[in-house]
Length: 128
Image (cartoon, rainbow, N blue to C red; front, side, top):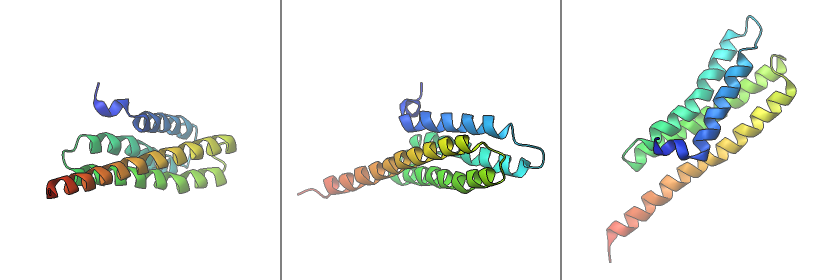
């Protein structure tokens, strides 16, 4: 098992991506563009969390976590469009949006953690 697989935010983002895949599989003909973009953004969240955890420098980790957070935010208007076009159930939209809000907070926590460790390491290196 890879270390990132133990992270709750990673597990939730994989679950979110799986839910999106299931939901977009039911989109009617003519909405491929929306289904494709939504699937890509959803998968990008988990992929960037995993990739960020595999990086050696704080700056690299932070970059991938910021990209993951951007993908979370990208999903918001895509889900809204799907809801307004009535290609996704309103209850499903509300549930997926709530998941996105939670994942967004968690990814922001990853970013803050990287920043905090990087700042702490810089202070430690300065010495007395």
